[in-house]
Image (cartoon, rainbow, N blue to C red; front, side, top):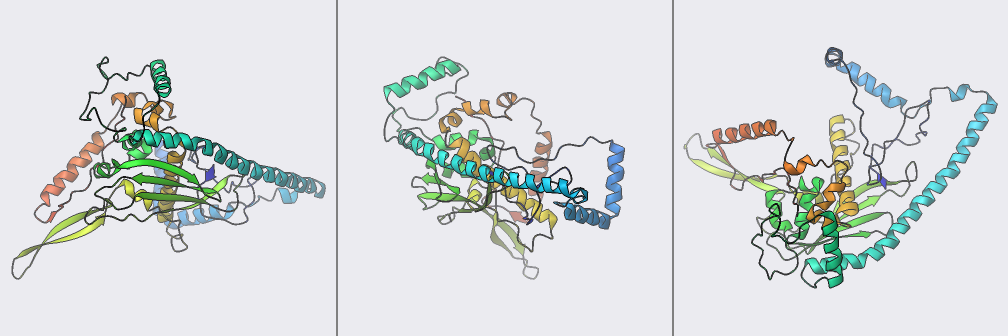
Length: 411
């Protein structure tokens, strides 16, 4: 339960009917993401307003500056009240302070309760890891309990009697554990699936466990454990989320920043970059040479290089600040999804059953219906045509990882 970092404005008064709210709704598994309500306008009015602002950029800056200066300021109504009424208002503020203290105590007790039950969950997570990695087998009681649940949910586990069930793949009968357990679970979790590229999958197949630990102070760390692989030497890669020392409005913990481990990539195996090769022609000798350079590219492993909060130099660039804030919110939400959804119910994400409980889940998604990718396909076609036209001047030897729409694995 925490709020995302925002541009800090000190000493703002609490929102009242007489002033502008100074804070946004918190981002966490227990709170709704802040959003802007859609405003229905006539097309002509919208176009006219846009034209006026487009022709008067100084007017836009003046309005933005004026609105910014109004945040947290009183309209003057309270100051105009009689002394006896203002005394009562001050008294209510004192009562509210006591309420805030209780809210703070409540949040701290909730955190301690979460830690208490997390200690009880831990042996179950350890048993899950042992089964996934082939170190032990489930008991007959556990298998029977899981099979009974499958029957109640109508899930077919035999792999033979239902024509719609997935065909048996190349997994040998004597395989240990559950191959690609965590990769499959992550690909069924929508926000994570969007980050995983084809090249990432080859590395994420080596995931042996994803764990979470609470910090001594408010915060938590996510631990990704890997078997020996050809991509990096790390046995584990950790991402840590920190909260601010002071609680926010309502007693919630305020997200401060995140830190990720440095990944020790093996030579030529860094999945967060790609190699671009460009032909250069010497005007005098007419000879050509190939120049190679590495450029950043999309990868799940960028998750371990989290964005940093805007600094004083960035504040003037509103677009840059908005972009950084969006990435901060996304990064925090990803951490919350892993902590609150993926780790506690990994088996449900592996089978795909957890999708039925997602608020934004649409049953049509499973059938691939009501999807309109024509526009994206057109863009891809244009990009490919452009690459072919420029082939004589520029080549990409490694190829940019192609990120496709995530498929839900159902069993």
